Length: 325
Image (cartoon, helix red, strand yellow):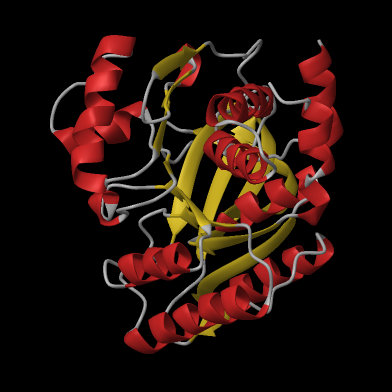
């Protein structure tokens, strides 16, 4: 690996655009000491509430924690939840000028009830229809303005199937990046899976690959290499990074495929691990790391974030210390 210190030292000079679905992650912590007399369900006495940045906003937060300058572009509702999300961005010193507040949408909120760090239930409030044509044009204009007026090292597409990234927007955005020689990193979901053609790196998980290919993909080098080849025939991307949960990850740089072992000691929560992985791999590759080295760092960071409950980030010094160990 190129000197990790040299790679990390370049992070503060990087400017990475994150575009996609943002959401509020709400947590309600409590304790259970009885069953409800109304129905056979536990009664949770809530003693703590917290709202955190989720989705593409969590990717921006991860980049910020690494020392990278994030530029977040998305669409929220013109509602109290949208105001709360913008306030959280401000608290995290992340520019919110790229957030379009739309009258035709609501802000996505995922609420989780936890007891003793175990998630009991999650309920979602969200709009999943495509953003309006007007919002889409505003979003594209924001992307174009950022690319043409300032240095942009990469664009991360963070797709959660909530409608911000549409089938008409995606190819235009990737083409714009390609024309300006800007690397593109994709965290896809089912609806637009095969819309992300010609990306620098494509990062699905194993379940998403199996669903997209219509077959069960085994977590071994032979079958994952075949899956990479099947994906590449349709997507024409450069690099594949498939996360495998407790089995680690598989990467293919267009020439060779590799398995990466998981670095998880105690799994507390897998929420947000994919956000951390794509943040680290994008930052490291933009800083000059080879794909396999960047993937190693990202896999390491993904393991660290799984050891903490809820959607959290990994600070750069934590990653450096883990690398030393």
